[in-house]
Image (cartoon, rainbow, N blue to C red):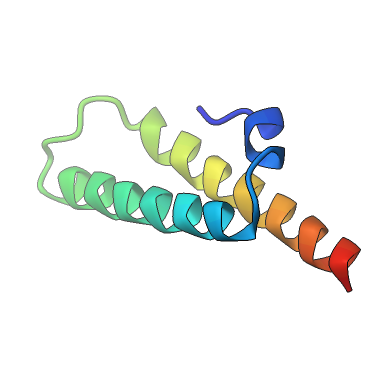
Amino acid sequence: MTKAAELRQKDEAGLKDEIKSLQKAHFGLRMQKATQQLGNTNMLRTTRRDIARAKTILAEKQAAKA
């Protein structure tokens, strides 16, 4: 789980990289779930919320810059 304070310390490029890596992780988890290899389905919820948290902070930074 990614903390909001950790994300706020990153710049926009770092946040975009973080979002991209979280999306890849989420896709991998979805594929594991589809093939019934995923034991902890709560990880899907966690990664989805981490992506949303990172996108929110990115939007805040972009709005503050504008």
